[in-house]
Structure formats: structure tokens, C-alpha cells
Image 1 (cartoon, rainbow, N blue to C red):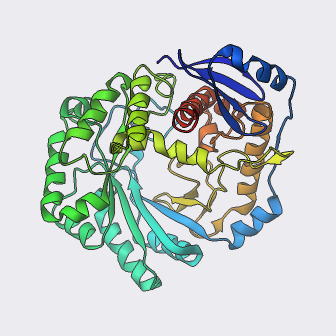
Image 2 (cartoon, rainbow, N blue to C red):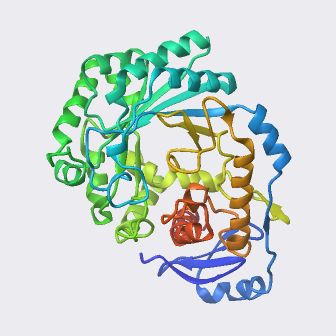
Image 3 (cartoon, helix red, strand yellow):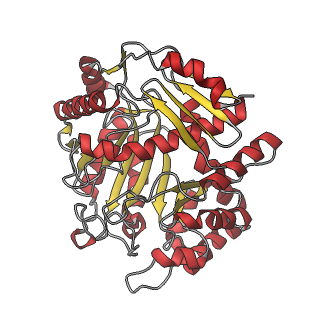
Length: 439
């Protein structure tokens, strides 16, 4: 297929393959198909003369009110930032020198837990959602039990519980409790045994695949309906050349093929500078997805996880003509969509920014003025980088994607390092949408 960009200006991008030409126009938010580059030349000539730089703008007084009074969507509790595994690519490994290390691991205690739950449930929306995170949260399983008990003390609302786990400890008392309380389980598994065990290993270097799949089989035997509805998989792809093999594994294995999958790449570092974005197997994955949709066949869960989140993002966009000021891309207001609490009771914006830039704590609540400064800083960065970019309307960059890997500050350099990756993913999404909707 060989998807490539033929021309890009501030207001449009012209792209396609050997037989399909597409043009996305930012100003009018239109996606068109042409039979040839020559057919598009007149429109691109006109568009190249049009440039309306768009300013990113936020209403700080309104955000201040929301931070003081508005509902908080999801609570993420980092109850154990230690882990019983030592995955080579982990964000807390030596590949990421500015992140915390397991040698400094902490466990959340009951007083912090109670304060966090009290703060959240007083501000939660109609459907509270609580996720347990780590490290490996199940090594502090008593705090999960306590959290469920405290929630029932504090609210009569139904609370949705989930846990992000490596799957090693999904057994015995812990498993019984999680199933009895209808927990959603996000289990990390990277593919077949030889792929998974290359990176996902115990401290002694031994693999984890056999233990994890044994635990999964046990859940399936106990309650098939629970297994298919409540268990999903987090797939890390450190070797992009094995993507087709990994997806094929999840599509063909009986215990995996019906469960949701969430594939993702590694966070780029100096050691892994090109671990995201377009890669050699992208063409085949796209073709497989498009053919399934066009033929009415069932799309596999890995392909859904690979492409549909961004397609949904594209389809829900504000698709009128650009005005003089817009919201800064995919930015959420830290502390509102999601609130991350570490074992010491410090507040952070999310899992992607969970050890720097604290935005409050369980004793004092949200640090409203600091959050407003972060919002202003990110908005300023977006204005410097994005006002004349064809992908401006579709960009889903957030504060976590602007984190500078050297000092963990939100910076122009941090976001600009992500721009090629973001554009690649947006271009991939436009291409799929063009294949599915234009003729």
C-alpha cells in the first residue's frame, strides 16, 4: 500500500497510496478523495493561499469554578508502587532515568485510603469509578478489600471497581473477592509465550506467561460470562515487527479471542526513540481492518483496540468551520476527568504523569491555582506549536504527551517530540476513514 504524504501546508494535507489520493482540509474540516494528484491540484492551489492561524484559549474563571465544585470522573488509587515482576521496558526501569524506581516503593495505608475515598466520593458524578493501580496493586490486596468496604460505608451509589494487574496474583482469596464484587480486570499480556516472556519476567529473569494463562483459564472455568465481560488485555508492543504475530495470537487463542484488547507502544526514550508511530506492519493491519469493516465481517478485538479509539475521536470532533479560538487539543482539566492518588496521598493528573507535578493531596484537596498554571502553560505551548498545523483540529495531545523526558516539566520540547507520532496516527485515522466513507 505504501501510505505517504504528497503535500502538507498549514491548512491541508494531501496523502494516499498508489491508487488512492485523499485531501484533508483543516479550515472546513473536510476529507475528500481524488483519482489523481492532478485532480487535486486546483483545490490545493486555492487552499495554499488560505491561512487562518487558530488561537488556543481557555476560560480560567470557569475552570476554577469546576475545580472547586465540579464532579470528578474517575479515581485511580496507586496502592502499591512496588511490583512482583521486573519487565525490561517498564516505565520504572533504567530506560527511564527520571522516573521513580522500585527500590523506593511505597504501600498505601488505610488512613490515606480513607481520605482519598472520602474526597472523591464527595465529588464523584452519578457513576463513581475507582481503579486500583501500581506497580502491582494485588500485592497490597488488603487495601482493595478495605476500599470496597469503605465505599459501602460512605455511599449507597453503585461504584464500578477495576484493577490493572500483571495477572500473577489472580488466584485464591484475591480472585474470589474480585469476582464476587464484579471487578473489571485489565490484565497485561504481550502475546505468545516467547514474546511475552522476553520482556515480562520475574526479578530472577524467569517468564510469567504460564502462570498468567493458568490464572486466566481458572477464571474462565469458574464463570465464563464474567470472564468474557470483565476481563480485558493490555498489550505492550516493544517490538513492532511482531505486531502481526501478536495480534494473530490474540485472535486465534480460545481464551483470548472474545476479550477486549488495548494495544499500545512504549513511551519513547533516548534508548527507544522510534517505538511509536508508523511501522512496517501498519499497512497490513490497516488493510485487514478496512476489509473486515467493508465486508461486514467481525473485526477482531486487537484490530478494534488498534484503530477504533482514534476513529471515535475523529468522528466526535467539532466539525464546523474553525473560529478564532479553540480548546487546546486533547487536554483535560487535571483532577476532573481523572484523579490519580499515590501511596503518600499526593494527587496527580493521571497514570501518564504520576510522579511529578503534584496537583494537591488528600488533606488539602486540589491545588486549584497550580492546576490553572499548568492549564495556562499547556495552552501557551499549543499556541506556539500548533496554530498553523493541518492537524490542529484533530490533535489529541494532552499534558502527559508534553512531558519533557529530561526534567519532567511540560514543555515545548516535550510536545514537539511527540508531534511526528501524533501526526502519523492522525494520518492513519484519516486514511482509514477515507477508505470507509469516500468514493
